[in-house]
Each structure stands twice: as structure tokens, then as C-alpha cells.
Length: 268
Image 1 (spheres, rainbow, N blue to C red):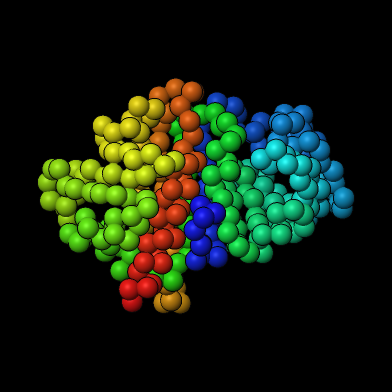
Image 2 (image 1 turned 120 degrees about the vertical axis):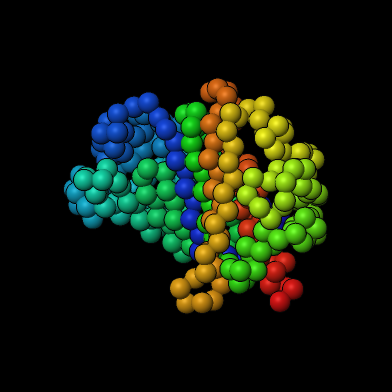
């Protein structure tokens, strides 16, 4: 995605997985910070409390971690919500703040960010994630009208307009069963992923690795009436533990949000 300009500065990424461990145990290992580097030393190499009590809200922690082979640091303020097993990490200093005005990490696996410039989701694909059933979400605030954004996907014209708008992502689409404007229709899409031309559907390339792959687009107008919020979710079930997590597709759909917004804004 770094090759394309990102027009939305405020966004949200969500990773949700069903895992086998007990909820309380998972929460406690995250809350008791000293256990984290022991559990995942290939991700987090060290952590220390620099202010306050590490088990109480408002404490400041300094983390050393490895991202894409690089040693990095950050400082964050932690808020604990024991009743809902939620930790809110507000990062305010460190390497990541060179690119972000805001970066909040909320466990379980929710990241809310405000971009300073371009970023990459696909970097997550370098790390293995366990769990057969999961959900990935990318959400962006964009400038175009909500109805226009929705209609490009839900009118007869979209069969031609989507590939025209994002020809570097989608090269073709056709309805193979039913009415393209009615629920239950079957569509065949040709798209470019990792420089390969692919045709995904209920029987496409994707289904070699996944029992389930649902792509959900939601478009909601912003309360102030200017622009809209586009949310693209992937709900999936892997065939087995060797099936890759779909971070690459999350990046692909994220870029669709960005580039279709650019297309619609230019055409207004």
C-alpha cells in the first residue's frame, strides 16, 4: 500500500481470533506486563514501568519490541478495565509516533490510529497467528458521499465502474447467476493480488485454504455530514493451522477503500 496515497487520516484496524486459552489467563498475562517478554520474546524483548503501579490504571510503561526485524521502543499509558477484561494502551512516545499522531492499542487485538502519513497493514503478514476462526477489519474516514460510495458497489454500473476506478486491483467482474441488484446473486471477480491475476468466489483460489471467507462492506455517513466512514470486514475460517492469516487481503481491501474514494472525489 505504500505505493498509493492514503486520503483517510483517521482509521481503525481490528484483528479478532478464537483461541483455545481461558479468557482470564489471557487477560492476566497481558496485564502483568513482565510475563509478556517471556511469552513472546520474538515480539517483545523487554518492558518496564517508569511511572506508577503497573497493575493500576494510569501507569506508564516502556516497551522494547521487534517489528519487521527492527528493534523499536515506545512509551504508553495503560488503563485497565477488569470487568470487561480490556486493556487500553495509549502510545505517546517512541518510534511509531514518527508516523502517527495517535496510536491506541486495545486488547483484545484492536488498533485505533490517526495517520501522520502513509502506512502498511501488510507488514503484519510476516508474523504467524494461530486460531482457525477469525475476523479482520479495516475502517477509514473518507471524503466522498456515503450514497455514492455505496452505489458504486450496488448498481448495475458497478460491473464496469469498479474495474475502471481501480483497474490495478480489480480487472473484471460479471454476474453469473441471478440479478446483480438482488441478494443471492453470484458474481465472479478477477483481481490482482501480489501481482497475480486471481478469480475468487465460493469456488475460487481463496477456497483452497479457507472453509469460509465472507467480505462485508459497510458505508455510513459521518455525523457532521461531510464524508463517510467505510468499514471492510473479513470473517474467515481456515482449513487448518497452515492456512495463512488474511492480512494481505486486509491490505488489499484497505487500498480499495482509499482508491475508490479518490476516484469518486475526482468525478464529483
